[in-house]
Amino acid sequence: MKKISKYLSTLGCTALLFLLSAVSFPLCAKAAPQDTVSSAEQYALIFDPAYYTAANPDVAAAFGSDANLLFQHFLTTGIAEGRQGSASFNVYSYAANNPDLVVVFGPDLPAYYKHYITSGFAEGRSATGSPSASVQPVSEQTTQTKSTDPTIGEVHTLVNQYRQENDCSALSLSDDLNKAANIRATELEQSFSHTRPDGSECFSAMKSLGISYGWAGENIAKGQRSSSQVMTAWMNSPGHRANILNTHFHKIGIGHFTTGNGIQCWVQLFSD
Image (cartoon, rainbow, N blue to C red):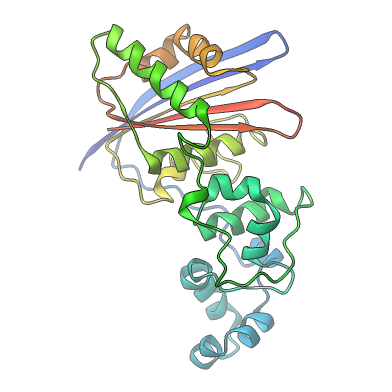
């Protein structure tokens, strides 16, 4: 069984107060965490069996009106296919009405459903309208990258400068890890923690995108106003510095998100 070692480091600031913590531990044969957003009751905001059968006659022909079977189809197949589960929630409308989410989630349709359940509905985000699914508002090109957010390139450059100074090989910037890091960056507004708002561990953001790893690490920060400021703070903290200079890591993803009240959230995700 492949050994998984995870390094977690946390950095935050409120006004003039900086909060620092770091923890690391090895794990062997750890099962993937259970998704806490998985029950029909939790999905009631976006799933209505009667609507689902009416909107998807092929599914109705296969499963009839059995609410449990319909819900399981929605979870295992329907969401990924972009099928709408409720008249009050349209995944394409949700993306079109909330372009900040498109920057984070790109084409990952399930992420929009989960976001609406865990925070979007409570935030009053609009999920109605009827944009054509053929005019897909969710595309790979909209995912935040080095070219669309210069701070990602700046942080990547600084990371490799520090690694070079300490005789460590350079980290390659991974588009997939960028996507996962951007997901995590937006989640820091709701919960500044290595535990995600849905209760799962931080690395589940990587797993949800099909990213495999043997070694993984996460650095998070909140409140720093520039790439150089957050990197200086991370490098002055032993736990964060250890992640940045870890020789087991060969790839990095960088997330950057600014909240509605102007607070910047930062994430680094590392993998082998």
